[in-house]
Image 1 (cartoon, rainbow, N blue to C red):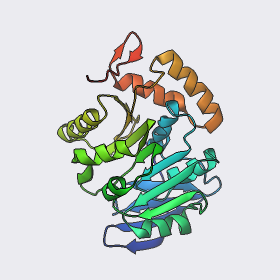
Image 2 (cartoon, rainbow, N blue to C red):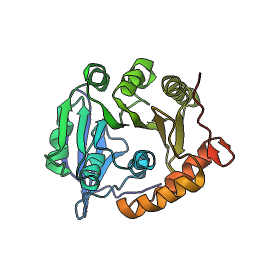
Image 3 (tube, helix red, strand yellow):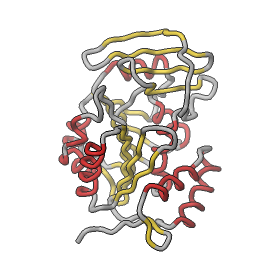
Image 4 (cartoon, rainbow, N blue to C red):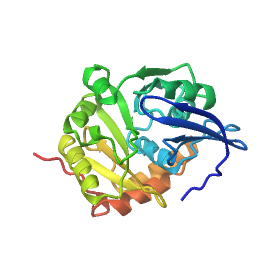
Length: 266
């Protein structure tokens, strides 16, 4: 478990959707939502770094889509993933969708969210993916609700529209936090139905987060040796521990002959 100091409260804002509290702890700036767990963490000396382990695991999309040019972020928070992707992928166009306009303001004022190449959209996530006609190489879903996963994650139509927003070789990543086995099973089953069983999970070590990856088509590489070599190269390029993501994938998913089992339904 990653532990952060409490820090000093420097900004508090209540909106119709949530309470957003910004804390400062030396060089760290932290965002807590509804007085619960930390949703964002920014090292002001190196704001492009990802401080939260689950956000690092979300970058596992690079294992299957090494250099996405268009990325859709559903849920902004303090903009951790947007900052990182903006730095790591200079040619990438980012679209960040959040229902609360206050998150955009706080991310820009306190968490150094860049202005260029980040298109902010204040809209409910399901409405955006349903009404948009854009296509993205990666869709990253990081949506929050106080009492467990938000309701739209139980709506199969949401995942159908997310898949429609992906390119033919696109990859979806979903951050899921729940200790309820039935809730987890329901969401995973919906993802697998929509993506023809082309999905894998990675448990973030020491945390409650599970990251689900889903694919429009079967990835070219699913073996441990190939993915480990991918991870080695990506770790050097992007300064993240992709080896840990590969290990979590193989620890969390059924294998056959040393490969992840990904079989499309007929």
